[in-house]
Image (cartoon, helix red, strand yellow):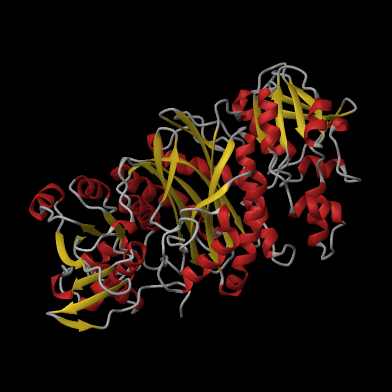
Length: 318
Length: 318
């Protein structure tokens, strides 16, 4: 439910089975739900703007215990949740962990905690509470809470904005393919899959330097660009040849691969990529622009020639 | 993780497999986790005290789809989560719903939403955000958020306090026994199991009238009294013959049955039970006191004779 229907102040959402379910639920709720659909919810309280998001990682849907250690499972679920705060340029306060443990995983609860803790320590966040329950599948729901004075949203992109992406893409997709084939991925790909870094400080820098819309790349660059386009009611153009690739991955991996946890952002002015890279030791690359023409959507070209853009990952489509 | 270790400001906790897991995780986290262990977390922000709790309901652990409609599943998970706000005397703001859906339950997402909405409307709360994911078991994690100026905590009971309980106990246990035997429970019991009411307004009234410690009865009266005793470092005495019973249930059902979502509270002065009952159409009954003698614990007597007090429900004990 990171996307919502275009009513009751919800953020307009893209296509897909998951969003059909969300739409059905929002219809039932009517005025009981408001402002649904960005990476995180903005909760305006007296004197403070809270940013809150909830994110579930389920065994055999988001990860396999054959691929990741329990420490990595804890780390990765926490990073995925904190990445939603990064997409809003929020400063994290802490997390609530709802952990569902099959009997076979009870002995590894401490290792899961170590991974959660590793990610929180790096993000300067804390564990505020949680719940432990027995269940048939290992599952972690992280609810993350932060604050912001100037949130980045999905709906802030405007015609003429430049599109930027942080980091180098395609690594998680390459790792996933190796895992699925029963092989151990090369370390650079495995690390991108097992140890993503929520771009928290980076996004606050970007917001401070003029960025006005952002989304984290969890479903895939093109799929998430479509969410940004739908929320901003804009046409996005991505130049495929400009996308920075992780090692020797294919453009297809960079366009379609999910779980990058890098940021896609829109900014009216040119950003100082060199200064960003010096500060964070991370690439910042201009990959396209907001054209503003036509229906909301995403067009991908390679050297000026239009290419078919791939669908993103959707748990509810086979 | 509604209970924590006695370090880093955590609330002292009782025994049991679930709490052993929490203890193991808190040890790993060290200073990364603070103040864990009450019904909900208190998050002090500039000018406002937030109360936040997260609660998971898993198919075949907390409910069975053979027993409840999908609407009831949504309602009950929401009521269970809001009950943690009631235990802190907090005013709800809203909830985040992380819903994990097996393919077979996708068509019922709207009914689940209806149940969530029914409970929220009655509590004057809203849906603030969420996440929908595919998974092997139907699971709902509700993270609830509220505010309070004067929280009730588990650690506030003092020697000489009177113990009170809201409502009449034992109905959910009686319903559960019928369900487990393959029978349909009598409506009064079924309703107590399927349609618990979070005592939100009631708890604020009780806090306003002098109550200074509370816990919601989710594990069972005696088990939750033990949590209160541990957190308050006090000895609690419960007079079994005073416990208000739901219809003709046994005392055992009232002592051991979980998922009541009534409140157990401690108050230094006598509460006006008649005024409470007029206001809320709900029983308020004095059932014992805080003796303050001996090790923290719970003693149950019937007509002055000590009885064995039952263990509560723990998912991690067979």
